[in-house]
Image (cartoon, rainbow, N blue to C red):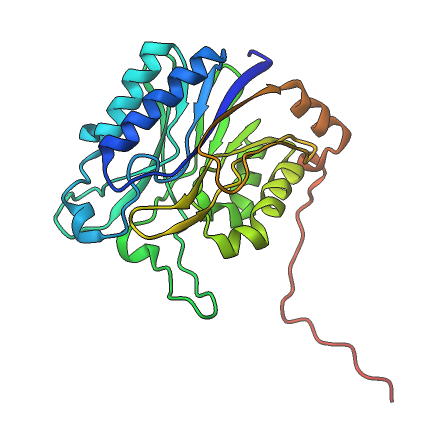
Length: 289
């Protein structure tokens, strides 16, 4: 295993057409290559950001035919850089018109080969006061499998956006040996302001792992607004990079994978956990007479 990863973190303002996002990705990976990066990490909805379902149905295709994923494979091979694609919508298993999409991300190696793929498990169905329900499950079907991607820098646990709020997923990754947790996202502004950084830092601290969270930012042409603040957090919970609310581009950081070993040695919570019984119906103590 190589103990140094030079990572380019991308913050995008993705469009509702594949072509513009492909062009942006190609420019970003060329810049990452100039900066000596080993890997480019992209955000959720990097390939297509389109909440108009009727319009999206004219563009979303099977994973094997997706133009953005193919372009990422070609770009990775051209520049000799790994790409974590964030995510892009692809057709579900039945491929029928009107079927729900999958929110899908891939880890692509420096030869342009897909080494792991992940479908978002937890769908963003929330009900903020004064705002319409998000209803991601109306458009997307859930994934059913946690996936770790093998890399030269250690195993990487794959997740997408709302998965961030389900800590057991990341605990399972850490228990299985993951040293990096990828959480590409397109956070809303209200939830981003309230919860984004604290949740990312918590996932890093409680698992002694690097968290890589590329994000969407700004006003999108499908009408949505996203929070930005793409981040890398080290295993001690320190923020190594924060791209702010509006920047579109990349920032490159160096990750020392020995920090994972050091954090887990100092606070060995992955070994200290204990099984316990849970009695949800225990009687309350009697009040003093």
